[in-house]
Image (cartoon, rainbow, N blue to C red):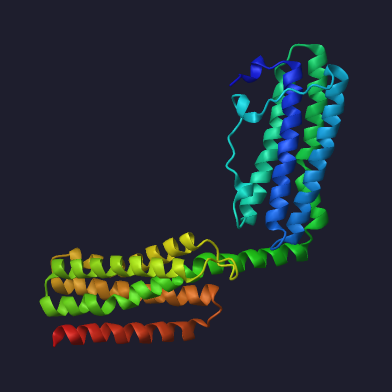
Length: 318
């Protein structure tokens, strides 16, 4: 890799041309990835890609007038100081907020590159060239904001925000909620059955731990294998499975951990309080994200949890 200070005027201009070409391809990738779900934002990135192409043409015309037709291949990764970018534009489905932030960072880096070049050169002709490039990028730095105001109207942005909310619910909230409900409710019976059958807190904890981990693994695989997300829009199956599995284990471990306390009745009272908190959290999540009235959600969850809780106590006490 070459240090930035070692680049010649020809190499700096060649690097600028390559950067503009690469950035236009990245914006095209963003536009294609967002077009199906966020058409207004896709149009913004189409316009940004076209602007990058225009900048590349201007830069190459200037380069050709100074150095001729031969353009050396020099890229960001050949020069020290550039931040290595993860290939976000190749990932599907694209996250709208991540894409917007990525684009902002691209614009900032480009503007900084030209300003730094203009500040460090000693040759007058090179300095003049770099100042012109810095002015071009200074205009380009605000392009996304300008295009966003023109294309992403309030109604278009509200529509895309609602789409993003639905995707978040499908990909994270639903599998997480299913896991939390299963982990919190299904492990109640074995845990409290073991507790009241043995009155041994350590063995009760081991039963609760085994039930939570087993349920987490089972629910994680079940969620991941349910569908690949291509038709339902529920996202990557591995991510959904991980979210569901972890939340299932968390729901089961919540009321198992109190049995690390040696005193049986103290541990049982705390475990019962934890169960009540878990059921309240589930009710709130259903109310907040699933548009279920809070009282209806609480009634459904509490009745189910109470029945499983009593079943465990009755079985363990028999």
